Image (cartoon, rainbow, N blue to C red):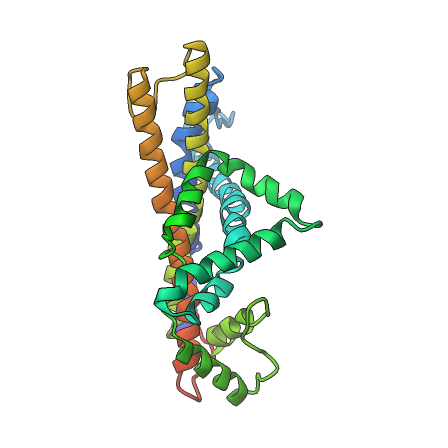
Length: 311
């Protein structure tokens, strides 16, 4: 058995993305499910039982079912996050590659105005005749956050989406496309230029792939966390309004055993702050993934080895 065969045997079944994003966020969501669904509606906890005459077999099957259920739940959360976090940001900025290109071709003193122009253009496009229904559906879970988004727009806090790629690097990428026989691909906003560059890097620059994958895992983690925290914030906000109207609460206030206005406001502020950290971090690391790909394409030495398995 050769070294490559041995590596194939000992290579873990699950990749880092599976463990961190799917298992991690699946586990992280369990307290919220217990609080707002099981306790909130008075349900009992689900049981994974196998009826065999051997106790340890029952326990093993139950544990495996529980772990597999968490993994599937993590996949479901990741999908919902792609629709209500990733696609939500695309309503305002388009694809991350578009935002990177848009901000890379602007100067620092004009960057905020250019980003606002991009947001106006994207909103007009998102509410076009054939897209407005999908746009409203993706905006709906964020309804309680809209005042914060408006404040961000007018303050100009766009650092999470502003790129460190310079116009010189973009020009170098355009030249590299011509040098590598990819001259039919043109780097411009609303053009399908990024995916071919990404695939070239993956196939020809294996040293850059681990760095790219690291950013991909982190951005995926924060994307799912953003969705979980957004759901928790929405539940707490609705419970707060319900308490104001009826003086009745289903469960204790988040992070507090008391039921008063100060406790509700504190909980909402903490959750809003955590959500801002998560969604900004997702956008930031997704942006850095794009930037790493562009840098790897622009500065990879000619004659780079083709893609091969790396540890």
